[in-house]
Amino acid sequence: MTHDVSAAVPYESAAVAGRSSFRTPSTGRLIGLDLARGLAVFGMFAAHVGPDPSVGGPLGWVMEAARGRSAALFALLAGFTLILLTGRQQPCTGRAGRYAAGRVLIRSAVLIAMGYALTSLDTPVDVILACYGVLFVLALPLHRLRAGTLALIAAATALVMPPVLYLLRSAVEGGNWADAVIAHDPLAGLTGSDGIVELFITGEYPVLTWLPFIIAGMAVARLDLTRPGMAAKLAVSGGALAVQGYGGSWLALHLVPGAQAAVSAATDGGSAASAWWSDAVGDPVAGTPYWLLVAAPHSQTTWSVLGNTGVAVMVLAACLIATDRSARLRWLAVPVVAVGSISLTAYVGHIIAIKALGTDNLPNSAALPVLLAFVAAAMLLALVWTRVFRRGPLEYLLYSATTPARLTH
View 1 (cartoon, rainbow, N blue to C red):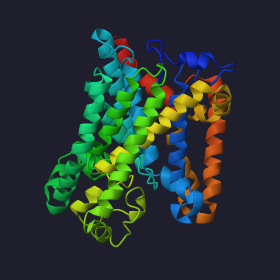
View 2: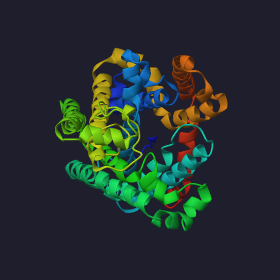
View 3: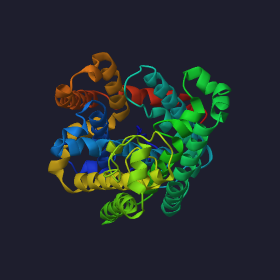
């Protein structure tokens, strides 16, 4: 979820930062990338401390739009990060390749440990960091592939993994094999969780259906985003994916006989009318293959993966276009870019703040002020920090943790 800019990694969009007349927190970075990260952080804030979407109106729509899709944007950007770490213009090979791979693996281990540490705080937040750590490991062997190949793999995993996950979850519910795996899983014993079974199958962020996001981000990173019109083409492609995902689900739920009734029954009576885009349908309490027609952000279906990927690609493309074309917008976006440049610190910090302040126990009427306070505090602290330090506190921790990899380089 975080990226590190070292002198060894070339950035063609550094010129974008150089054309600005002011020093931004992301000088030498892909500013649009950090802007997208900042928006993803705020989306997480909205999902975790913001008003419930049931408030309705424009505010309710924004809160609903943030759910699931901000995490998908983070995952897509994580794939972009993986390519930055392993060589964007030219994949690292030889000793440099081993060094880059070592850095990624060490970061993965730190993220996994950090994820379980945050989970132990017992907040209402489903922490995604352990999933990210595993995703980095699984996607690392693909880092030398071209954009087109990566896009095909992302599409294939989006098509295949959701049905596989559905079958595995059905098997977990119908048998005792998962308990046997958990009983012999060192990770489960160490963390007090369901270990590998939870990470890959039963968790809120199962690795199987989140792998397409990181591979899609890798494909985007392999593109030459400095080519005229490339970002616009990326935005159009994202829009097409979003229409295919959410539109395909809408058609399926309306055209397949009995689909909406079956989905409603599987969610203990939750309405399936908005299941093509909203989590309001709820979580399934009973298995039904009709669930694979849903595109709710956390439904772990092919339609949801396509739709969420499309939204993430559109947001990233919009950020790249806006920061490239408008110096005024770059200036206005500096606080958000600052948050994006220390996104790991911001993400972890807001979970600790939720625990310390007990925001989950506040009345609903306080949700919007709390959300605005979180956003304002994050921007202020990020601005102050990035004016003095190159990396955020936890970003520096990740960088320092890769010392063993540097020593072997």
